[in-house]
Image (tube, rainbow, N blue to C red; front, side, top):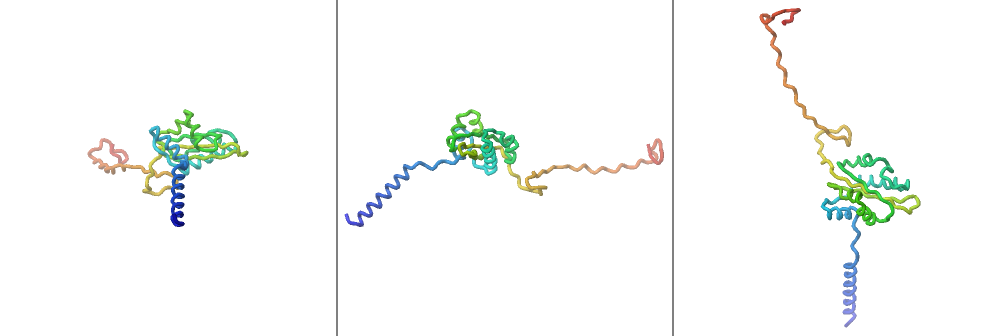
Length: 198
């Protein structure tokens, strides 16, 4: 075998070895939304996608819990008030601390009946997920907000008073024009008082 043949053999061998490594390499980790969607699909619910508004709500909650070093749904105020900007008809929140990665946190939620119920929220279509570390950096707090039943967006057919204010249309029916009353004839009057016929 000549020099050229050896080079071709080495290149081919290296390519085969590289392909074998790629084939046996673990797949890239799924995103949190994909992990939640996989779980939901296995249980008859629809897939969810990340939502920037829900991500922001989850991040505010995770940071508030980390700042106070306290696992609490009320760290930043009542959930219904915090989730209102999302405009969802229904929403739920899961919180946790302890694990540094989402996969283990999700496993913890799946093993808890209340958290599992939230993950399987019927008609949910969007999710927000965030984590934050406490001041010492030793504890990671997680928050997940899942939501659905969003109102369909209506195209503006008129001007709104302010951005974000819903457009309201009211159908009004005008009263039929009233017919002028015929003036009574003086012969129809029983009593005439101050030019009024009674």
